[in-house]
Amino acid sequence: MAESNFSKVDEYGFERHEDFDFESYEQFMSVYLRVLATRAQKWASLLGEGKSVKRTNIVKRYVRKGIPSEHRPAVWMAISDAEKMKNQSPDLYHKILDRPFEKELVDLVKTDLPRTFPDNIYFTKEANHQTHLFHILIAYAHNNRVVGYCQGLNYIAGLLLLATKSEEVSFWLLKVLVEKILPDYYSKTMDGLIVDIEVLSELVKSKVPDVHQHVINLGLPWAVITTKWFVCLFAEVLPIETVLRIWDCLLYEGSKILFRVCLTLIKSNRPAIMSCNDFTSLAECFKAIVKNASALHCHEFMQAIFKVPGTLSNSTITKLRARFAKQRREQLLKEQR
Image 1 (cartoon, rainbow, N blue to C red):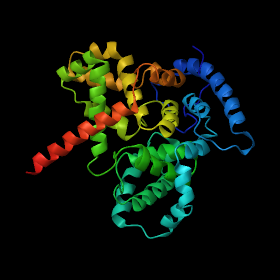
Image 2 (image 1 turned 90 degrees about the horizontal axis):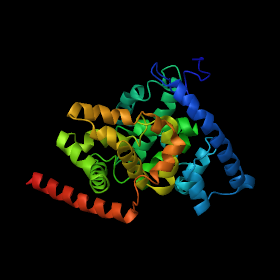
Image 3 (image 1 turned 90 degrees about the vertical axis):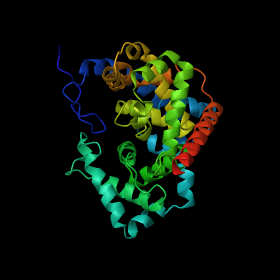
Image 4 (image 1 turned 180 degrees about the vertical axis):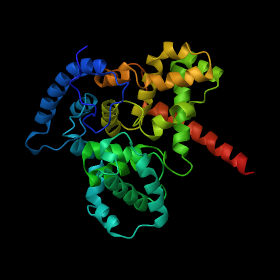
């Protein structure tokens, strides 16, 4: 086979490991590059002559089909309402960085810096992204005292930084994600995360009951499978371009997108999951399904998340969240007695 023309480092700085399937990637990119060219023209027309991005059906459709990388910082800020938050306190980020930092928070953040994307050339000790990431995380920790610093935020902020190339934009996007879009994932008790894992379990039970029962029978808790999916918003889980396409929709449509992605991964890989006959093989299967070809082909994958799960309304998710949140409160009260 001819040697691949693709670099051993992708455009975002992630090293491609020895087992990287260059042949599949080349096949994917030969199609996807044409998609990107078409989308770039459409977005250039939409954003031409200083037009502002507003929430319309056209913009929603464009977002679902992917935001070109050069437009992501501005479009993400507009569609997520992060721009509105920033306009209310335009100097906030720089003011926080000008103040003294609490040693405890500094130590917490610095502990995770070398663990963040160790296979990315921009996050090595010699590169400067660790310093930028430190600024984003320490500013957020001081700004939101309830959350402070929580593991998982480093991956989100790190990927925001790679996508936007801006500390300040990354700070505001992190703020809108944690405080407006995701329901209490990063508090000390992580109640929102625990509840959403229960919600996903119930959705799987409803939409793929045999898979739900099979997972229960083999004794693999959904929390073991999906905690990282939710906490990292699929960063360090799915291929980078697929993650960014998911974030395009997440920032526009909200946390429902996470359930659509989870359900698509589970339903699309039902035969492989059902073929597992013990705890270990099931755990390995869930590791494999996020790295297979269907996850790499981000355009087809994103089309699938709006078809494969079927109907999934915000009202259904809201009701399930309320139900499991109530159960969690009751359980915590019992434990305190």
